Image 1 (cartoon, rainbow, N blue to C red):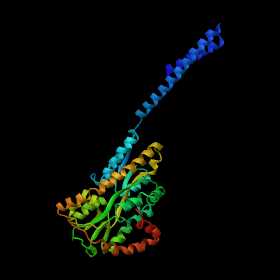
Image 2: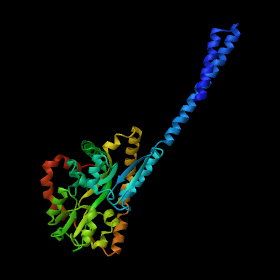
Image 3: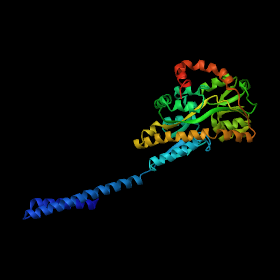
Image 4: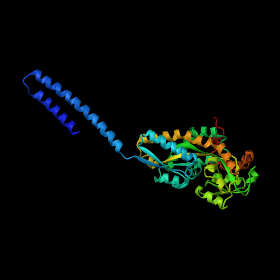
Length: 364
């Protein structure tokens, strides 16, 4: 920069001499022309050096590292989805933003992660919507049994206006919602007996999330729903503290619950379990707008990949578990729906019957 300033000063002096001295018009004109050329050269050099310095400053700047947490094993679609998300963020920010992923509740279970996002002590989390309903009640509607008929139905609702209106509610609790991801349709496992019908559920002590809608649904089947943090479930199953648990196939498989005496698997599809990739509002709002855009785009683009990881492997994972001695049954879900009908009656006023109907009757 010093050399450039010197050139600019020199050019200015030539202009001054040409205007104030000299014995002829020709010499004055020549001097002025030379000075103008030198000034333009100096300005161009200054612009080039400024651009070079800006690039060097950006290159030498600190990389922003964000921590992302989830509660499942590192073979679960949550983890695979976050890996894809991190890859996309890296690409979209030219390496300026990195995402470190922590699996298996290393940074706390889902409820703890949500609380940490609110406080700004955690940057990103993937959580099922079950625990989220304890912070934003509108999400509890998604936990009604048999609300969605299949994956296409669920995706159409959640990616559309209904789902986006729900995501907007997160702003009130200090969280920014990125996109709906997926945990899958939930199934039941237990150590006591095969479930071939709703009557077989009676008396089973079943681990569930801390979610009143789920608890009411399982109680309607005559079960003993027992809320418990996921990090405690495997040991509780081994010790016989609980008889069973319910989760999507990806969770059952990746956490190998069949090794904890869960020899019976019933494909009931009783609840569709969406998940969300969530950002701490306190952290998100401090980021450069371009980085905010990159996070949002990556969250949405990674959703398709994460969902495919859930859905595409279910059949193969069920077959593999059969090889490990798990008995798989496919009970008539009409019995379960009939038994759980009182849950809809109980929550119709809270959620609004029109909102329930908008989901169950959604054309896709």
